[in-house]
Image (cartoon, rainbow, N blue to C red):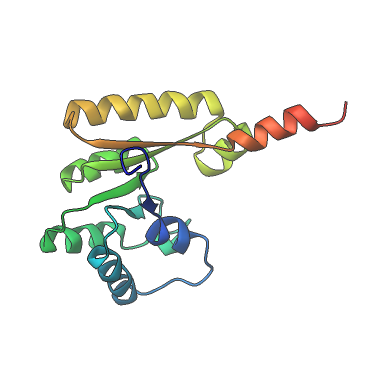
Length: 158
């Protein structure tokens, strides 16, 4: 079963992102230390989202530098929000990326500043950039709002 099931720990990114409280860098270090010492192999540790928009993701690059210093043998993923932040990740020697696109124009416009078609084009461009940077990189794709669109279209009253 382990060949087919991969567990991705999302607390440091999705979990913290959903909370109103903004934790200090030192508290985040305590959280990440616990996760890094666990048997989990896949951890999404942060996001390149602008901290002004999502203050919970402040310090993601600092967390990466801390992780890098300690040489943990884990798959450590950063969620990428745009091409410029992807280039910074290359400079930081990050090799595992979460890329975001949406089939919902409203989600895409409010979260990515792009409609669904442009967010998909951006994702493809980022995949190409990553493969050019390091074709051994790990890439996870997020297609947001897929089920919401399905349910809205399939079950709405006419």
